[in-house]
Image (cartoon, rainbow, N blue to C red):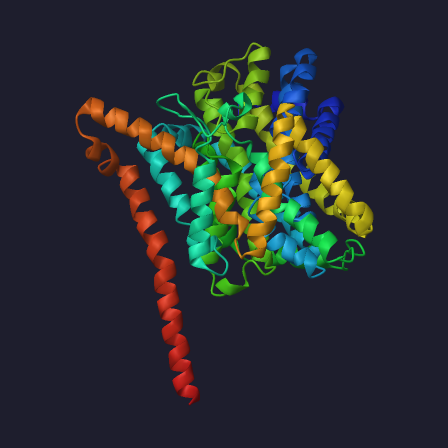
Length: 505
């Protein structure tokens, strides 16, 4: 790397490159904060403009936009309980309760700091561990994807606030919604009801907005909730939160590792990373009941992981030519437009370009922290809008965002229909998190199961394919632990309570 350092520094010190990096991060934050607009969409819109740019300028700009877009999703997740991007799903669990408690500034600051730290760790992993991690990713096949999805579904126990039965029912509803569209094996259309637009399945962003945002807007109007006075930054809160976060190195490293590994697995995405990290934070906490009530650790776990996932998703792209996430696929297109083919030969043929991009990736995360901390108080002014203006504005943005994804009026109708259903289910005590979890992981599990069974039948031993591969065995053990640890914890907790009562008696 040292022999390419002069070229790298020459590229990174060009004013145009640094300006476009900062602009890319800023635009990404704004786009990510708007419900329905994703980092993938922003990168796709930027793609034509990169054709006339130099290859290093193009990559630097798109990398900044990617990083800013993933972080920006937490802003609307914290302020209005609407994940701006799918990766911010878990951020709503504690971020929005913090806002309702008047701690929006703490939540936004914690999200900015943890996002930057996670992104930097992901960038360093991308810089130093790309060859090793890419080789490891090659060992993932259909059985491993199936067991990863099953591991994720075991989190329903953690995400079910209140009734476990209602959580399981919600998870089943999510799994059912995930079957809409064309079957991954037979090619049959399922539950499309004659609408050709549904053959590609339900749009995840539409469902996220419907289940997380619409019920809150209806409740806001129904209860005539008073708007917040805005995000007031307490003096010294950034310094306090920074030291609070860095004094938990194991917590940060665990969340970052989960994000990096999830990013390396093609197709998993930041939504899975943030949910897995949040689940780990709850399981290893001594105060599990405080999660979901406005605990800053929940925000830190989610945001650290989903931003570390960005670096992880670029590992298979640069090393194998396989994008680990949809935004990485857009960056792949940008590279191809520049006449550059990602893969095993990229590091040997274009080392200066690769190292320029990797170091710029780390710098972009530092820029993102600064923008996040400086801009949160201005972004938070949305809370000072009266409800009579705020509620219609949110509904307008959600409708525009849901339509813009596929330019499809059916998505708007689905948004309204599922939003009303989510409101009814919320009043009945159903948490939206298990439903969304089932929707995300159901197709991954189904595809992995179907492909594994076909491979097993071809080899003559289906069971051996599922239960004999080393990574599959590890994932199965994690599934068992994930299922029984909450039960064991509950049993030990009840015994502890009984003993305390006896001592009190």
